[in-house]
Length: 92
Image (tube, rainbow, N blue to C red; front, side):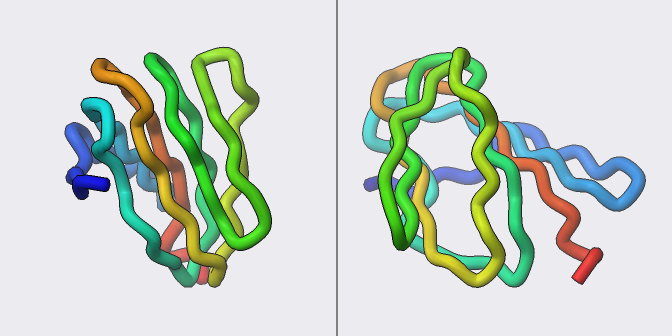
């Protein structure tokens, strides 16, 4: 998987929203945080994997909470994919 950086990052009232635009095979390789975050897909599709399972998400999939301290990775499965991570890093 090829690593990407966010396209837009917005901080609002203690919460960060990162928007990613990804081509097929791009994403966020295996990593972990000290905070949990929601992941949602707005266009295309992504594969979200963590210690317990993998899930393919589209715009019709309910957002997923990725728990603090668990490794996870997010990979775009098609060109034109847009996904979002929302978190409150300074809360912990």
